[in-house]
Length: 190
Image (cartoon, rainbow, N blue to C red; front, top):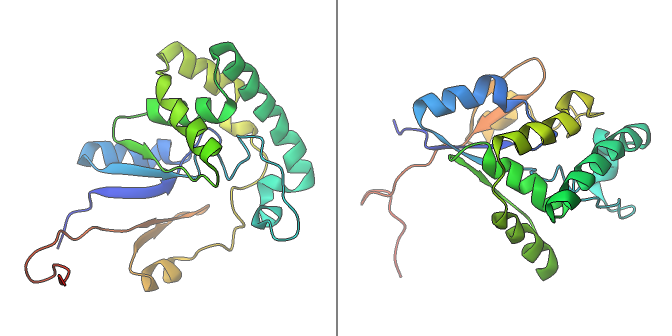
């Protein structure tokens, strides 16, 4: 048996579900978090749907009525970001970084400009008052639509892919454990 040292889970300003039950346990057990979906698949950066091949067109948060409601939250994020001299993406990343020393956001970038913008979030250290103001301006309870379609993953799928999974009524959380290299399982060197 090997200890779990990190949990990869979706976490963002608009996807705060892990805060209630998962993060307190992880903190108690000193388990780190690799947060993905920090920009909610481009929603928080203001990214527009790109056409037929854009998978986000099938995601509830990007459905017409939901997207219109969520755009109001994105606009509130943009106003606060402008006050700080940041972009909405930078402020959303800075918020995740401010939520815990054990949380590491995973960012995707298709261009050098996106990478530079994401790294620019490191210039911002949010105060508790700024965090509270941001969470008040962009309340998770006001987000319209799930982050992903509800049929995205099942407990049996997670188990078959080598993950330990626990399910709740609203989502499935998959954990991948890391096995340290020992002489018996170390990668072969060439």
